[in-house]
Length: 149
Image (cartoon, rainbow, N blue to C red; front, side, top):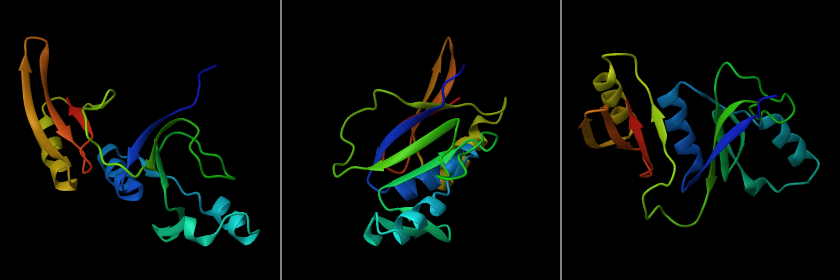
C-alpha cells in the first residue's frame, strides 16, 4: 500500500510561501478551518496561534498545499496524498538546499513557465545546458532552490 507523504519546508512566512507554491504547481491550499475552529471554541488553542487566510481560520506558523486530485481528511483538512507543508522557523535560509523540487513543463513551454514563475516572485538563477538536457535553476520568494525543466 503506498504511503501518504508531505515534503516539509522551513519558511519565514509559511502562508506566503504556500500561496506561491500552490500557484506555481496548481495545488490547493489546505483548509484546516473546521479543525481550528473546533480547537478554538473548546479553548484547546489560543487565538494568537491562528490568522485569517483565504477567508478562513488558518495556523499562523503552518500552511500546506495539496495536489487537487488527492483526497483530504474531512476533519482536519489535511491532504492524504502529495503535499507540501511550510513551517515557520526563526532563522532565514543560509545555505543551498539538500533537497529540491523539479517542476516539469509541457514540451517547448519551459521559458513561458519560467516567466510565469518569475511573475509569482521566483528568481531565475541559471539556465543550464548540458549533454543530458536543459533546465533552469530558480529560487522561490524565500530563496529555496528548485528546477524548471
